[in-house]
Amino acid sequence: MALPMRITCEFRLEASHRLWRDDWTPDRNERIFGKCARLHGHSYRLLVTLRGPVDPETAMVRNFLDVKGVVREHVVSRLDHQDMNAVIGGIPTAERIVEWIARQLLPVFGETLYALELWETPTASASLGPEELAALRGEREAP
Image (cartoon, rainbow, N blue to C red; front, side, top):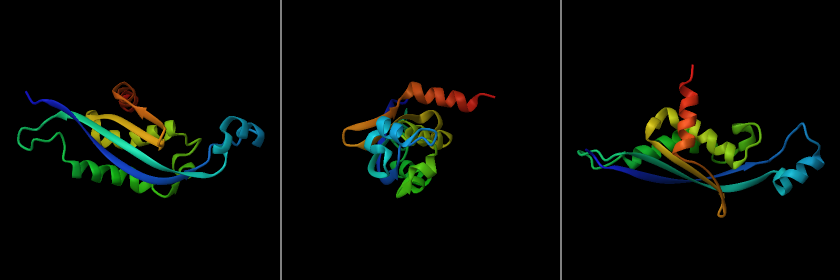
C-alpha cells in the first residue's frame, strides 16, 4: 500500500475589494465593516494542500508543476489584480473568497483537495479543512 502524504503549494495574488451591503445605510456599513467598507487592496497568500497516496512510479502525490498550473488557470488568473466584488459577488470576505476558490478547484482535484488557506494579511486568514471540503463535495453531488 502506498503511503498517504500531503503536499502544499503556495500562491500570491493582489486584489481589491470593499465590504459593503447595498441594503444597509453608509453609517451601518462603516459601523460593521469599519475601514474595510472603503475600497482597498490586499496581497493575498493562498495555500493549496492535496492529500493522496505517493505513486510508486513517480514518487509523488501529484506533480507540483501540475498543481501550480491548475491553480493558476482556475484561480490566480481570475483573481489577480481584480476587483473581488466583481468576481466573487456579494460581500467578498476572506471566508467567501476561500469558498469560491474551493468551488473552482474541487471539480479538478476532487477527493485529493485536502485543505485551503487564504491569508488576507500576515495576521488574518480563512481556511477550509477536510470536513468543510467534504461538505462542499456533498453539496456538489446532491441531486
